[in-house]
Amino acid sequence: MKEVPYFLSLDQAIHLSSKHKLTPTLEYVPLNDAHQRILFEDIKSKVNDPPFDNSAMDGFAVRFEDTNTSPVTLPIVATSQASAGDQNLSLKQGEAIRIMTGAPMPIGADAIIPVELCTVDGMEVTLNEPSKPHFIRKCGENIGKDEVGLVKGTYLTPQAISMCATMGYASLPVVKQLRIGIMCTGDELKIPGEELKFGEIYESNSYGLTGLVKMLGHTPIRYSSVVDSIEALREQFDKAASECDLFITSGGVSMGEWDFVRKLMEDEGDVVFWRVKLRPGSPPLFGHWNGTPMFGLPGNPVSSHVVFRMLVVPYLRASLETPFPYDRVVHARLASKLRSTEDCLTLRRVSLKSTKDGFVAEQHKHQGSGNIDSLSQADGLTLLQPGQSGAIGEIIEVLLL
Ligand code: AMP
Ligand code: MG
Image (cartoon, rainbow, N blue to C red; front, top):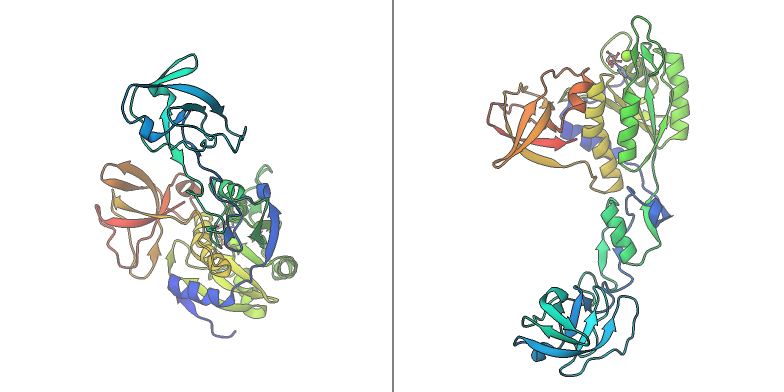
């Protein structure tokens, strides 16, 4: 086997994988299909928002100079409703026009008195307080026509989609979803719902990995679990490499006799690196099979999830030149001692409690890398740097789950 970079720091591993980036491509999708997708280019507003000066309150449109003393009684000469647009509706000195929230400001009016501050008597209104020249939403105050509202690489949250609708877009240029294969390996794996025989466990990693791929806005292609045999793995690798842009395996990458993913990649694949200074999750492998990039994640359930977050997400981020959601880091104070190491980034599962002095991080009682409960109960993963003490009271970074 050729020599490959071995037991790298996380930064080195990310740097190496990013030399083998995927190339994003463009597609247009209708607005409502664009949720959780990634913008391929900057989006400029097609209109001013708001498109006309309008009232921010239900009340009366008046002239500021007529109403800066109180009380003052004015005749109500017309009504301006949202959408019932009379472009020429105008107001003369000493008059008031009834107006609804969002309705266009009449010509000549420059102030709004909220209805709560008025007494209405038939066709007259008494303003109980002087007007103020606000409560008017000015044309283009949110965004102007041709101004960039959202930049390339934006992850389309519900609020971003609403923004695109406001800017006048019926469809959006988004990054074409990547097809990401997910393949678990191990003789002991059984589908949940089937009966377990002695020595078997339920396969759980592919379900979590599928969720992670979906959360990132891509298309998961789930393959059935592969038994620990070189021939079976080779066959599934060929299939995944031809069907996917990238594929991910779990299990079989450690040092053991039965770790056939690693063996197959060493003998017949193209390994870029193997093992990374992460705890948990040190065995991962990155390389190519028939030219398709693949990540070999460890089989332990916590490790497979953690390595996806620490290696696969940065790889996709580099490929698509976008920040990703679900990648937020907060600072927290350690409530109990955290076991750190000299050479690895330590990713313990912690719950976060919000206090008036900021977040406090509490460890799950049992931190084994096979204990998915520690991950499912956690709010975040500690980003304890190699050599950092992990002492009680230390302020550390936590990656939110
Ligand atoms: P491996 O990396 O193949 O040595 O697996 C490490 C541990 O993770 C073993 O205890 C496996 O049984 C377990 N494991 C491997 N793959 C999965 C999976 N897909 N779901 C749940 N546990 C797994
Ligand atoms: Mg295995």
